[in-house]
Length: 177
Image 1 (cartoon, rainbow, N blue to C red):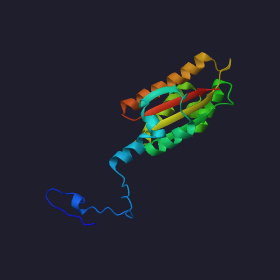
Image 2 (image 1 turned 45 degrees about the vertical axis):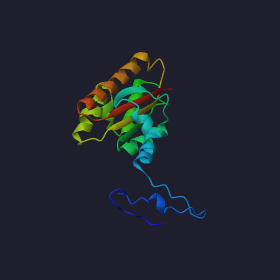
Image 3 (image 1 turned 30 degrees about the vertical axis):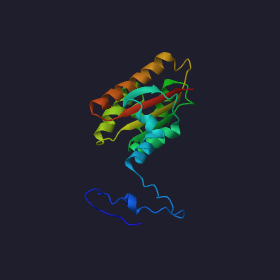
Image 4 (image 1 turned 90 degrees about the vertical axis):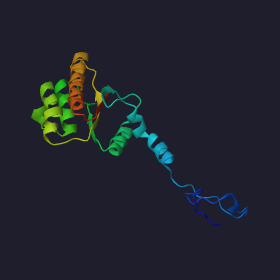
């Protein structure tokens, strides 16, 4: 097979007269194109995370933690995880978050300290690429009632607003035990 490059054939494609009809000729191998790359990027965990607003606090519902870890990695963002399934009280929940986020214990002893840790403490450490945060197993007990859960989620909403003002993506997903 010959390749003719001319004014009418800029990409070196074989002209119709140059094709041979041999049965032993293998079909040309598919080369990756931008469409294939875009389709691959649009599939998987990253695509589902891109469908979520960049600065939001929402239930984890349709997401799996493993997919969020992978998506955060692909996007070059921090993945932060706290598991509070064994917590029963406000102080235990705050302690599980402090441990999961590697905050100094005294920084997250109350909701104000937690907000300070989520915003100012992290902001002082330098530019941030973005965050995917998962709070798993928030308790539904009389010692951590609906009001306490809403206050905790309000702290994370305030942190999300803080990062939105700095044009940093911050997505928070939570689940109840």
